[in-house]
Image (tube, rainbow, N blue to C red; front, side, top):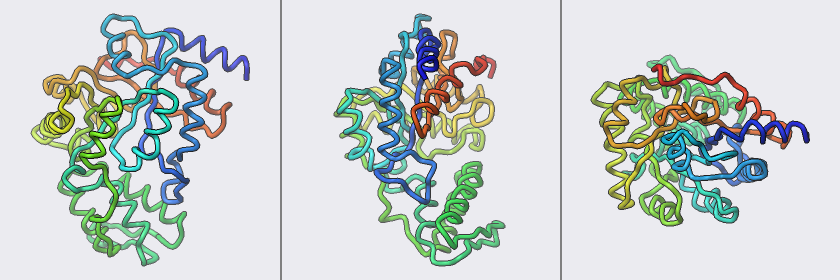
Length: 318
């Protein structure tokens, strides 16, 4: 363990690790058991704080501009937008004096929850033993929590690769079949957004409706990228400088033309879901991120080390 710890610190001296999280429930959720709960999240923070200096993501971006990253640094980021952040991860971060950047979708400020939250909600409360939607070739088991979890994963995989129109049509059919409505489903509000911003955390954009950009038309992609920034800046009254690509895999979920759109929309830097550390020649518009999921200290260190020694990718070639 000591040797592993020293190696992680040594390899981190000229790089930065940007960590990615999504929803962090207060307790484990059988519908989404892969999501770390608040206790697991705190364990990750403790391991990272012992080995790295946690800095705002903007410091990493500034370091890339001058070809000098903050030594042994790490950043904390979150994607999507969840109402329970305010009573969950926010107090945890404040107690530890840790900065974080929150990349948000904005359609939920108009009353529409995140699409995958709608899927989770519908399958959680379905009364039938099978979700059956023959028009879309969907027939998935829902007898137990384990089967519901598998069905949720299958629906996420299918729906995230659809166009916005097709995804919305299937979502409505799923909710109709499950006999649930999304109106009462918790979502992040503009009040929540301002509260997070007022506590000193950074706000980034993550599109309006969370489409994978390669499954959107150019007009849709430009609107999703630019309008999200305009909405967020209007709500917090401050510049929004960073962007997170939905799903975030370079060359698959976004292309060179989307990077150009992000630049043209006025963002200063952007993050991906490509697993890697940030090194001095990384692109400002393709900053990699990863999540050390644990569950214990040794495995977290092993995961951090694996990320540090992974082959460095030249993402500028997109």
